[in-house]
Image (cartoon, rainbow, N blue to C red; front, side, top):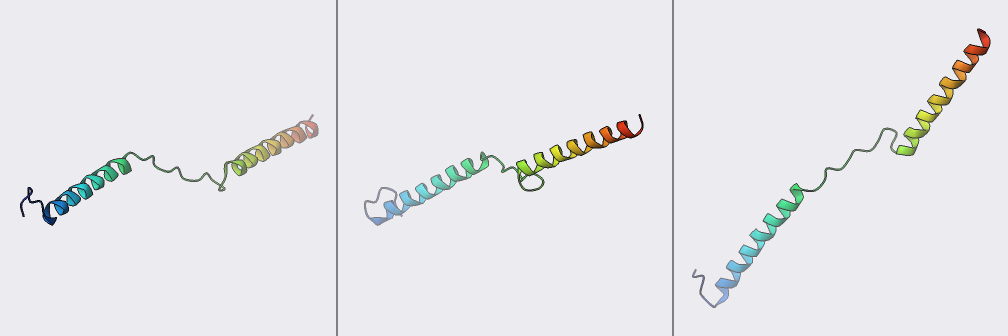
Length: 71
């Protein structure tokens, strides 16, 4: 198989080179993609914020009731 042959063999060599080049490009770009972040606890951020806000309200109400009971 001669690289300077003008028949079908040179096209197959060029296509093989193009495939190798594209594989190299895709491998390089895949390596630089950001790693996807796992979902937050409870599946969504608003649910986590609602849980934290609910816990805060509960603590405030408990402290307020302890203050009124023991004062």
